[in-house]
Image (cartoon, rainbow, N blue to C red; front, top):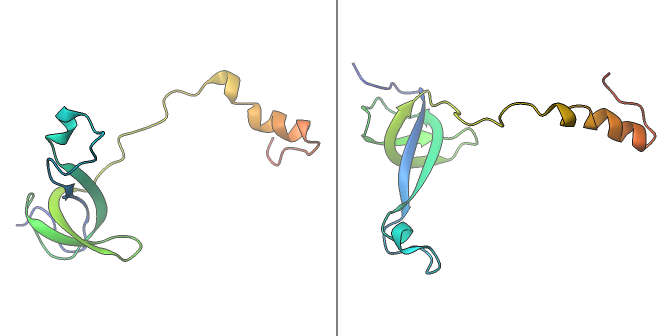
Amino acid sequence: MSYAKKGDWVQISRIVLPPGKRAPQVPEETQRVPLKKMVKGFLLQDAEKGDKVTIRTVIGREIKGKLKMKNPVYPHDFGEPVPELLPIGREIWEIIGRESKKK
């Protein structure tokens, strides 16, 4: 059984610039590592993790890269809500003389 099947939502990585080919203003320790690009899309063939694969992105581009993850998550967030900022949208509508669309 394959790690990922054709049609699965996956993430690949590919090297955009190899070590030493980065912009001259990039710090030396950064120059020593490749610039990698991570892309999500639908797998076009069954594959194992680490295989070179082709994916089709949601906008239809076909991109080749190394299979990293099946069903990738979005691990970032914007943190806890700031209570002082929550009413700003309503207050702005009041300032410009229009009623808030949602109350």
